[in-house]
Length: 102
Image (cartoon, rainbow, N blue to C red; front, top):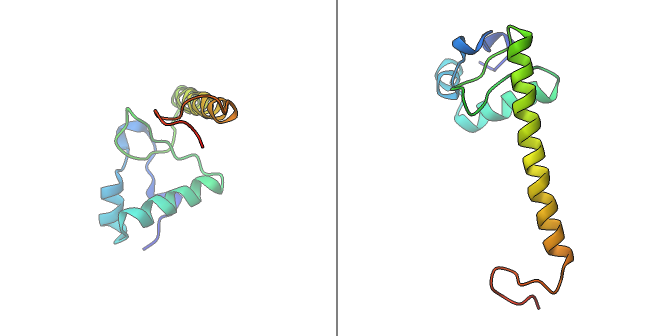
């Protein structure tokens, strides 16, 4: 059995875990992650987050807005970290983890 959007319930309170999806489909964890990623890449809005155990589809604009804010904050945090790493890389005179760059 493969994962389709129909297997992802609506509403945070009905979220389905990867473990449950593995049991339901017979797929391993990696295959479930890959299938979920494929659905998302194809445009499905499948929500999950640090405060939710599992995947679900939104049922309200409030849910969707909170998810958008969470993803935006996470993305901005990742960009800040990437920019710091780029700055370190571009500053060749800076010490790298206690070692002088060769």
